[in-house]
Each structure stands twice: as structure tokens, then as C-alpha cells.
Image 1 (tube, rainbow, N blue to C red):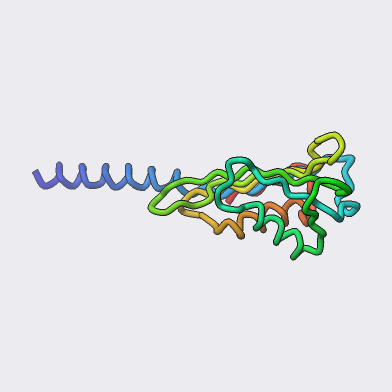
Image 2: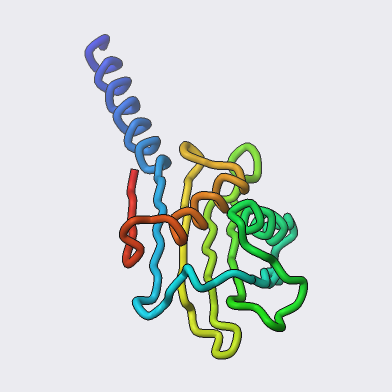
Length: 151
């Protein structure tokens, strides 16, 4: 009887470890169009995502200013329009699961650059950390075309 209990215990422990392993995902990517010269972009307009109730747009604006860029309050006379999608998830508390930021041509809406950050509960970051990660990957990655880091 004791051996059977031990086997069940070990099986439950293995199942628990397998479930926990799937919860630790950390992914950050950035893609910049080959024809885009990011150094020519100086003035941005951050377009608020219609489903954003947590003011992620303000965090993006603040980070762009911190990086030395200008942020306009209107879409006119800008070098790029910044759009984003933030996805939130509940796991004891609400946290930002995924953030995608896209820099778009203001005349054609063409995506000049896109960055993404995805962190599950075990590797979660603050919204400020997610914005920082995405914008840093877009503007400062050594290999901007297809940058991908999985940890």
C-alpha cells in the first residue's frame, strides 16, 4: 500500500511540474521594414487603442519622450503614428500579458516597424517594463529585421 501512495504522489508531482513549465513564457520581438530609416523619425502621434482602459498610451508617450522623441497631440505633421494593442490577463491580479506596438506611416498607414512583448504570469513585467522592452527592441536592437528572443 505504501508503494502505491508513493507512485501516486510522484505522478501528481510530475503533472504539477509539467503545468508550471508551461506558465513561464517570455518572448520579445521586433521587425522593421527594410526600407525604413528609423533615425529619420522624430515626431510621433500615439493613437489610443479603443479598448485601452489602463492608459497604456500615456506610458508609450512618456517612454518616447524619455528616449528623446517628440510626441504630438494631433496626427498632423508627424513622422509616424504609433498604434498598439495591449492584452491583459487575470492570475491572482490583473497583469499585461502581451503588448504589440506598431509604427505606421502617417500618409499610408503602412507598418514601418512592429514590436511585441509577451510575458506569462511567471515572467510578468509591469506595463512600463513591457513598453520599454518593445520600444527598445524596435529602436535599439542590433539586428532589427526579425529580432526574436525567447527566454
